[in-house]
Amino acid sequence: QQTSSGVPVEAEQRHAELARELDEHSYRYYVLDSPTVSDGDYDRMMRELQELEDAHPSLRTPDSPTQRVGGTYSTLFTPVEHLERLLSLDNAFTEEEVGAFAARVAREVGEGEADWLCELKIDGLAVDLVYEDGRLVRGATRGDGRTGEDITPNIRSLDTVPSRLTAPAGGRVPRLLEVRGEVFFPTDRFQELNATLVEQGKQPFANPRNAAAGSLRQKDPRVTASRPLRLTLHGIGVRDGFDVGRQSDAYALLQELGLPVSSRYEVHPDLAGVHAYLEHWREHRHDVEHEIDGAVLKVDQLGLQRRLGATSKFPRWAIAFKFPPEEVNTTLLRILPNV
Ligand code: NAD
Image (cartoon, rainbow, N blue to C red; front, side):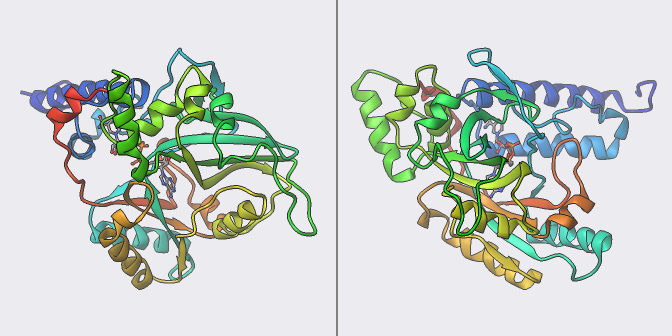
């Protein structure tokens, strides 16, 4: 049996069911900070939805979870429009898929043109910070990518976030600078937090990612201030007086301005270096102070990034290589909703 657009009824029903489930899981994850399925299960459902849409493109409507940046925002906070959209990242689950991504980039910008910036994919909460004339004026969550939640007082309470930028040697602070990054909960402090919460008769968090999101998205910024949250930047948005040609140069300048960037990024001119990086961090994922769920590969040159552009959901110049999920027992997730 087929619908009027020629899609088998079974496929359409499965699509609607998956979309509904993914929306529900997104709400629990982004708004309630309390997921009931593992990330691996969520990713598998999203893959199945994508495959259904590849087979039957009329199912790919603009409101499909495959087309939207995952999150949404809660009415607990004041909504805030981002200066520039915050996007998600396309995923690769095998090194072959990374190779296919690099081949597509090479076809579009020329063989050997792109340099590859490799970074760790931090499993935390995406935030957006705006500095005007060197002063932090706003901090927000990603939300649906266009509108996030205003969490400025909470962001200010983080030790790693300067309220004023430092002028670089021989230069001045940018007139406007929007930066993006990940707030994370250091893994070595996680058990300690849960022990304290249990002592206080409160529910512990299911994992460090939820601890970061739940600690940052607090109505009372003093609760946020009492938690050892940290920030690492991984992107730039709108800027005026911040002139760089490469994303790696941006990181060097952000560091000079006093902003927190990772020391674990590498730039490689070819895929051999990229694969070595992925291999290394897949084996050493636990040697880092925060959880990582993969590595991110980006075209380093900002001019090429502009040429490659973006879809409604992700930049076409970057891809996340997801490490095999370390399956969390979903029953455990259900009995450990966070505070
Ligand atoms: P994503 O987590 O796959 O990747 C995009 C995000 O990665 C960016 O927005 C950014 O904040 C972050 N990031 C971390 N390090 C980065 C770096 N070095 N450079 C650039 N970005 C970096 O996508 P998403 O849209 O944020 O979330 C979808 C994922 O969240 C799913 O794949 C799933 O794993 C998880 N999720 C789980 C549930 C659940 O119920 N368990 C529900 C919704 C989403």
